[in-house]
Length: 382
Ligand SMILES: Cc1ncc(COP(=O)(O)O)c(C=O)c1O
Image 1 (spheres, rainbow, N blue to C red):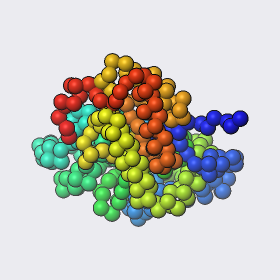
Image 2 (image 1 turned 90 degrees about the vertical axis):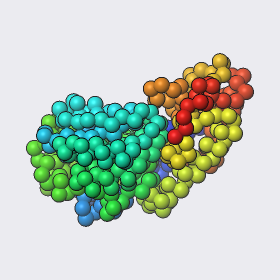
Image 3 (image 1 turned 60 degrees about the vertical axis):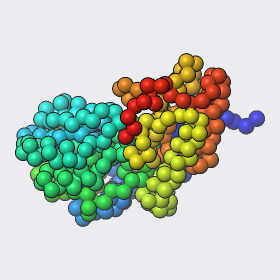
Image 4 (image 1 turned 135 degrees about the vertical axis):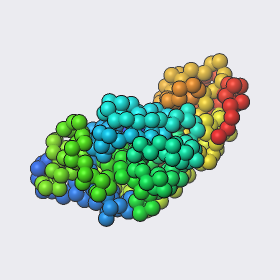
């Protein structure tokens, strides 16, 4: 009898990784050994190259999930007398604001709700009105809805107003274009288990060298001090504390595969195709996307829950899981929704498989189509 395969993860990370990435974890590495130090150095150089940031920025990896890297980068980059304008339109923007509260750094938020992008004009006005704002923080792809925020337009305003830019590019870097020669960021954070398709275990920050050099005394926490991590790595080639060796080895292999796929443009093309197949197929079943096409990212798509009285997310989820696909619950504050990711080792075949699983789940639940509740249909479309 054939073994049932493990389910495909249609989620925003951890995600489905390749066999080569998994196999790369079969070797044990000495954390102080030069082989492992070389591996870390190589990974950092390659990440900088993806962002064309090799001459302006440094890459500092940090043990832990992405949130640790975001918190550490904020704690390290932001002086105690800084004030940050946080642009929020979902859970991860709100998390940046919450982090600043913990860190005791002043901030003001521009919250545009669950599915509206921040308006560059409004950001411009807020910066003009408050000269105390020194930094602007933006989530590139707000994974809670899948919205792709207007990074380039916001960055342009931040530069014109002579402020500093921080980007949470957790779910976008590696697929969506980031070019430090044109995008004037001081800090950009991502993690191993997103668009580079590594396994969880560490995040990393690309930090403007000039800015970081003045940040020796900013961090409130030893383990989250990226200046100290950078300085120690510079001097020794080593991570300060036990590194996630297997995750770094897997990531080095994932980077090889990323390059072989054509780098970020190649990956973006596959994800964009996945998204097109998914959205067309879901719409053909009557599902409504939360976002209008122009705001939708090729990372993850939010769909309104079906309005039929038989619908229940857990039953729907379990049925799809039994068929070999794991989807993601919604993360919106007001609307009942669910999400389906397009990233990871997923191709058209898997997206079509997931669509068939959704159709079969609806049939099992005796729901004719994915049509949302009437009130969802009347929401303004952005
Ligand atoms: C945009 C964004 N920021 C931050 C995070 C937090 O990362 P983690 O869950 O790895 O801590 C995520 C996770 O999905 C994310 O998508």
